[in-house]
Length: 285
Image 1 (cartoon, rainbow, N blue to C red):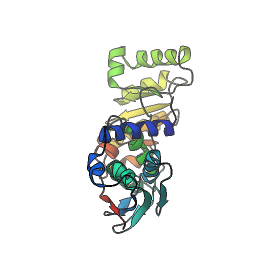
Image 2 (image 1 turned 30 degrees about the horizontal axis):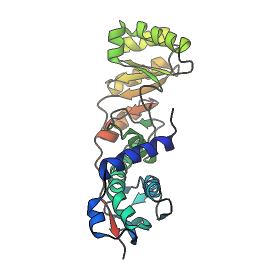
Image 3 (image 1 turned 60 degrees about the vertical axis):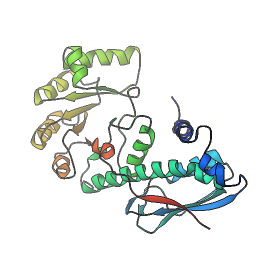
């Protein structure tokens, strides 16, 4: 499996190729190739800053000698009028990288800001916020990184790093017992150490998992349970497994779920409902 840095470099390379292809003709047409310049990242909206380290990687992948000076770090609060960083490099480098840097940082900062709102709302409880796989294709790496920067916890990254038996798996497998037993046998014979989570849709499902899941699964998802039922399930499970609440949870009701004592709350909205924040990269003459 590739490292974060390897995946990041691949993402950046593909994104630059998508944008530049055979050349940045706007820049090539009017800026001398040897022109040097300086630009500043201006913050135009309050929130949580994310993507500074990614921006540095982008500039230095294109021009290793670029001088990148950060004024703020990923995860810090940002306010209108502040500066995030300056970069000194070839003007061609700055203009090639400008849109990619802004697209990434605006998106990541929006996700980090929304995640911070969720995490801060339940800061008085032991429950942690999880993201999901409801991500933008080919951009998951940085969306999940933005969740982490904003104070959330990453769920599984993809289909390969954890088994998660959801409703369709269970139905196609012939029931929750069959699904768990088959998955546990698969792990034992083919993927030792791979963790198994199972989704439950009722208290009856929870009771089945308690009866036959010990030593096979590590977490129970309580899907679309109301807070009262979450509390009942958490008490029944009694720490035999980790617990995760999911489905229909937002900023208006998340405290009620955290009060149940559930270990995790997964919120797809952290990513798919986040709004990009306003940033700009301007020439500093």
